[in-house]
Length: 113
Length: 114
Image (cartoon, rainbow over all chains, first blue to last red; front, side, top):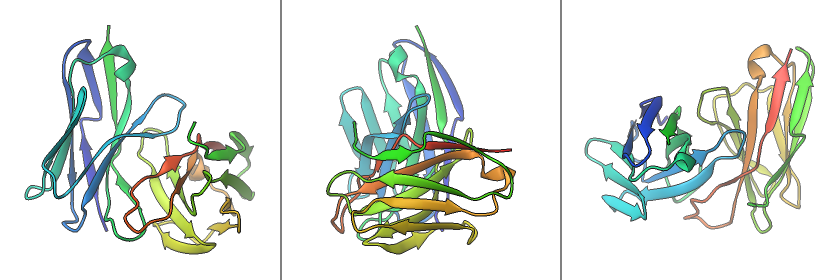
């Protein structure tokens, strides 16, 4: 089955800095890669996703890049703000059937004002 | 609000007991998945239900079982509870469509086994 590794487990930045979270996956058949944000005591929420036919996707301060050959993908947050503090999860899945993502272990992002 | 609701929000059980957790899917969503999220970990897939049938299962023992009802709500049952079953249990519902990639999570049920 799919295995998703996520690094770092904790990331501490100053407000305004950029933050990068990296994930690798093992199953070359995976073709959909979502990122979820989970604030303390709340549910995971989808913030951005990328499909395997695209190398990069951007949404305001958030971007995701995908390298299919190396089987890794990254989340980039620019101009971080204190409200970006949360746990971020990457996931990998195969579309076309049941949506069953395999999640990474999460990165706790702390943005210091 | 995503519309996925879970009950109860918190639960304390004793080792060896049985527990039933409930999930109401978002309107129009016919697929429900259950995840176990241990402290400091990512969600681990337990199983998925589609049109009242189990449609995929993760690496969990048979004492984890489920149901989906005609209104697409779902239950997760865990028998013979163990201390390691203590976790946040998340339900996620998805709309119909073979290319569907959206999953809306509920707020979770925090289960503590003592």
